[in-house]
Picture 1 (cartoon, protein in one colour):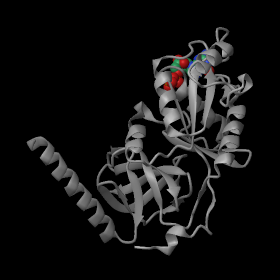
Picture 2 (picture 1 turned 180 degrees about the vertical axis):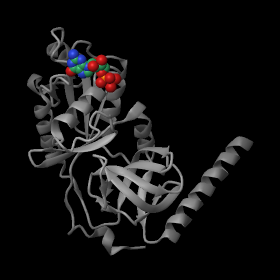
Picture 3 (picture 1 turned 60 degrees about the horizontal axis):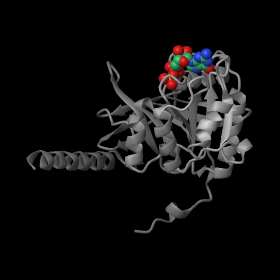
Picture 4 (picture 1 turned 90 degrees about the vertical axis):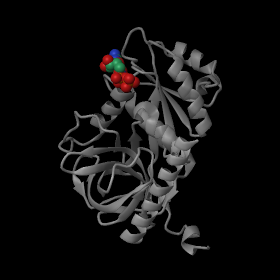
Length: 296
Ligand code: GDP
């Protein structure tokens, strides 16, 4: 079946890059994500800023960047296995006092395989024992050669404690993403991915969704893998109720019948009937597959 709308790119606009921060445990992923958010979200809008959240958008001199946390890499590998990689740019964080560790190596190979531009953030540069050249040498040995050593990987010294280097990091993300020419169509039917999900007492299933194409609106009928529902309410990354989420924006969505798995693809449908049918059929297939597995 041929749909003209599928090839109409006249509505395409540049969309903000989506960035993930990965690295060895304790090298400062969480601290960096929290520092970027608190440094870049306007005061007064900082409600709940002390609380760590899994996805948010910041404004760097009028240009937006969305950061997504990848808790335990679970959602991340789920998304990869479904071919719905959401990340445009990967930041590998390496503690400047600790250097490359086993999980850093894992992250390097994942990042290389993804084909995304990679930036190395050398964190904890506020510490006296931090050593940028040591990290560069260790990374260069793993084919992550710094630009100033003739390679093509940017290394940026940062401190999640003092905030040093964070502007550099954000500017660099924007430079890298410019080259990618990220485009999407805000008028298309909404499509995105579930970053995180949970069952909240009194509110039901809550899905943190990132919009990759189109605009997700309250009232939309959506399918997330085997779950479906009409979007009842959306709160943005500052916890405020909003009517819609635009390109590369994230927020919490209420209205699904069940809790979707992290990494699930979200697609808006024309009607609630369609949404229900697609999700129910998928759920049945999934059950049949489970059953055949258990009888083998
Ligand atoms: P994660 O496991 O990668 O998310 O690491 P965390 O963000 O939890 O940080 C691990 C530890 O390193 C915590 O005790 C942080 O306070 C500390 N830390 C993180 N970033 C910095 C930094 O820039 N400077 C210093 N001195 N300590 C940091």
